Image (cartoon, rainbow, N blue to C red; front, top):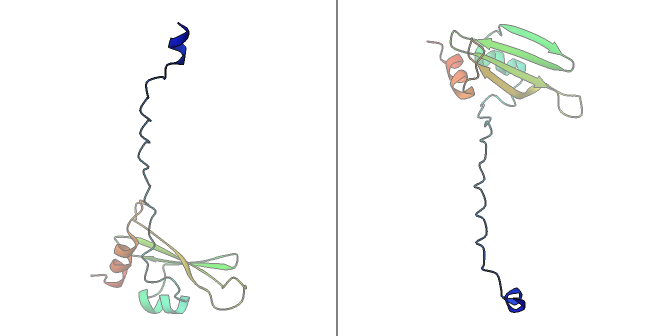
Length: 110
């Protein structure tokens, strides 16, 4: 019995690590990032809604197919022209939709 204790154990295969699944992050594909309020109005026309939020400004543009919110903030120094830093697109029902498709819909309202 003493000899059996010295024998090596059979090698156990190492467990295969579980595959890592990455959750795709939404990509900002907006061609309007960095635009000023004046440039947005020139691009889409008069906004349906304009809301001041602290130092920021939200401009909302609507079509029968989607709603686009563009959020403008000044540069980090706090002075200068407000520019679009974030864009949110959704269907009129509130469900998320593709930003590029919404922008295209607003650019070509036919």
